[in-house]
Length: 352
Image: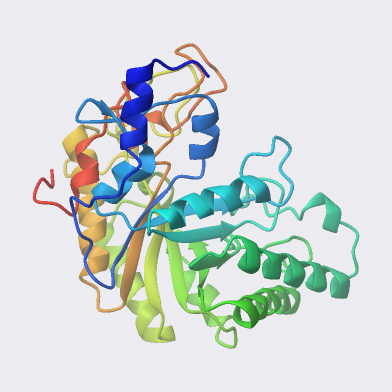
C-alpha cells in the first residue's frame, strides 16, 4: 500500500473511540459491515465531515454499538470466511462494540432462494451432519465470540438443505436448529436469534419453533421484496412478540439515497416503483427518514430489540466502469465520494 504520511496520521488518529452520540439503553442500533474487510483490502477510504476516518470510528461516533457480519464456512475467495470474520470480530470488540453474527451454515449466500450445505458436509449421514453443525458452532462461540448469533440466515425454507428443509423434513430442520442452539448454550451467554425474511408467513413459521431454545426473532424488511406498508410490519412484529414472548428485531433493511449509480454493476434498487412514495423519496433525507421511521417503530415497541442496516459499507469499489462491483452503492451510508450521509445521524440531534 502506498499512502502519503498525512493520510497515515489521519487514519491513526481515527482509531480512538470518543463518542459523539450515546445509544438508548436496551435498544440495539446496528449496521451490517460484512464487506468492510474486503473493502479495506482494496484501500477504500471513508470520510466524515470531509476527514478520512476509519469505518468503525464513524459508526461508534454516531451511536452504533453493534456490528453485524456474516460467516461462510469455506468461501471460494476467502472473504467472510472464518479467519477473516474472527479478525474482524476481534477488531469490533476492541472498540467496545458488540458482534452480531449471521452464520449461514453454507460456503456462500444463504437466503430464501438457496440454503446449500457446505461442500465438506455433503453426503454425511444426518447424525454426522448434526455433530458437524454442533462442533462448528462450538468453534464459532469459542473463537469468534459473538454477542448475538443467528442460527442461519433468512431460514424461511429451512437451512442446510436438503437435510433441514422445513417443508420436506420439518423434524430434521428442528433437530438441526436445536443442536446448534445447544452448542451456543453449552459455550456462551450470547443471545440466539432466528432470522426470517419478510413478515408474511412469519407467525406460522415461528409457531413451529416453540420447543426451540432461542431468545430473539429477527425479520428482514426491504420494501422492494416485502411490501411498502409499515403499519402491517408493525402489526406482525407486535403479534410475534405477543404470541411467542420474544423480543423482535429488524435484522436487515436498507433504502436508497439516489436512483443513480457509481459503477456499471446493476443496482438492486433503481426504479421509483420500488420506493415508498411520497413518504420516502430516493434522496439523502428520504433515506434518513426511512431509517428513522424503522428505528422509531421498533424502539417504540415494548418488545422491540433493535435494527440492523444491511450494506451500509457497500460503496462502489472496483472502479467507475466495473460490472463486478457493488449492486448497492446507492443504498450505502456514504455518497459516491464516500462521504458520510445524514442517515448516520438517526440517534443524534442532527436527525435528518
